[in-house]
Length: 273
Image 1 (cartoon, rainbow, N blue to C red):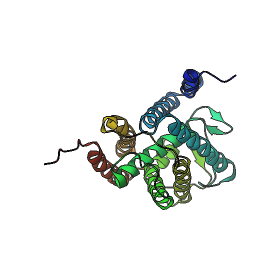
Image 2: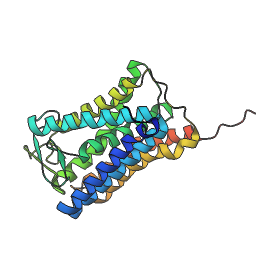
Image 3: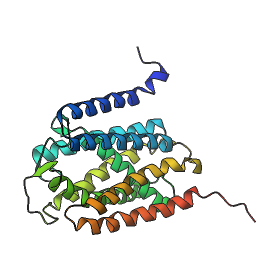
Image 4: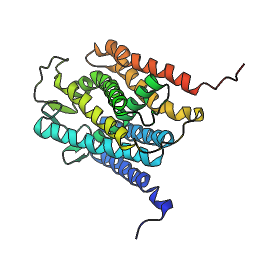
């Protein structure tokens, strides 16, 4: 017997709430304050992005985005940590908390949050709207690649900090060309982010997305604020210190372009003279 419609619509949110409670409870019992803070921040970021996507895209498309990002993000990280695919060989430590088959549970959640931020930012840059509807195949590929580069701009500062300050994972090769990081890892970030975002765009090509309204502007600002907070964090606490100068250019340029697009989208229509 299937669940009642009212309950079925809320099962994903209920499942996520239980998962969040489990992660936080486990971290409090068995991990350090740093791990607890990372898990809480990741859970909140994931929840905020899912809620924003639900308002901007609709319930079903938002859930599809979550499932694509979480499943492929987990697969990429599992293959990376066990076989060296995409990012090079590395091994996770206990810093990021509980794992599912070797991958910290918060990592696939982060993949969704960042992919969603890249999706919205790229749309605002190109279309002056947080949602692009159903563009042609060529436009979908181009926008997905742009979004993947925006996601990877975040990783330029995040990876060195997570490896050398937090020691969240250990790279097999420690003398890479990017502050000790391998350049291969950034190709991996672009590829994985592209697959997630392009896969989502293909999954909704024949689906009518929720009509947009400027009244939804606060929900469109959520991914921008999350991306901006990552930039500010890297500017203040980035390690190596050179990251603090790189972040405002690598992340600030697409963010400012997206804010310009946001202003055009959310501005009230002027009456004809």
